[in-house]
Figure (cartoon, rainbow, N blue to C red):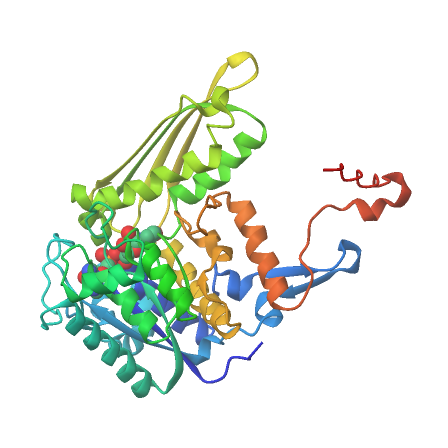
Length: 445
Ligand SMILES: NC(=O)c1ccc[n+]([C@@H]2O[C@H](COP(=O)([O-])OP(=O)(O)OC[C@H]3O[C@@H](n4cnc5c(N)ncnc54)[C@H](O)[C@@H]3O)[C@@H](O)[C@H]2O)c1
């Protein structure tokens, strides 16, 4: 595979808490003032070969990822603040971290964003692209990408959408077919949301795209087909960080033991701008769908009706300003075991939203760029690990179990490095203690 040569431009539509925490973290790591905790691409390792060979290699030595020093950044936002102002307002970072990264953050000024006031209703937008019509906005975004590449000297780019959650509408008529999507652009169809425009502009500029938000954006099959046709890798949607991450760890454990579930009540309080935007019930619907879908797919109630057929799953988010970015998520889980005896589990996760999300943005940027250099295109299912609502091929259900996603990610990295994937079977360590039965003769048709 082609090695990483030259600078990689990371483009961020949405310069908010997640984006600025990511940016400051990369800068602090580059100066060796911080450790990239939470990042698989920076700290993760992969075992190669048998367990008795003790070959464990860092992921960044296994595959040719862009080094942090080669990253440069660009952004769009519908609010004019530079990254230092945003970081100060969001109050995620300590004062010391902000002072250390101030000049770097100050240099990242967003370009005016594509905006639809009906899609993001709780933010006072003062920095929007003034062109009229979808095609004109796309032309502007494509010119921005070109200019940012030229100004930063980058040889290539990736785009990670970190914009606010948009209000949810029904599935549009142009959802499936790229030709319909083009027609909807020509007709300035109001069902095309701004984050679809960023995705479309990225694809047309040959830029891999990941959707860190619950927005439809690249989640439309029409755009996924376009990505495949244009040979661009894409991934989404909605970063799996706090409560949903815990859910996709715990639910597979309960299911593995065939314990039943009667109810799963999840509630959150958060006070950042994301929480303020999600306070709009129609924006919350976008989030609710990515959060709720997880258990249904994971538990397979159609296959295990006696265990999961009667599950009451509720998710709520409350905007509570005193907490800022320090979200607290509670889960009350009602389960049952042998003979139907009931039990309960309670979780209280006192997390930091953007601190959990930032390293995922970094990994997605580096892995998508890797996939692009490997000439992979369309949906990158191996990146499911990062998402609440992972994309999957037509007719394939998405994989939500964090540990299967983790194995899939590492095996894919092995394959990309030309190494065999691991099955974790382990029978061959025991020789004729565990003889492997001959495969059954195929039955005659
Ligand atoms: N923090 C997490 O753990 C987490 C997890 C999963 C998903 N997300 C999603 O990531 C996104 C960003 O979260 P955040 O906490 O940084 O929110 P934030 O409100 O701090 O930042 C979002 C930014 O996007 C800007 N914006 C809105 N519409 C835009 C547009 N059309 N073009 C350009 N900019 C636009 C806003 O002005 C704001 O600066 C949200 O959609 C959120 O739901 C966050």
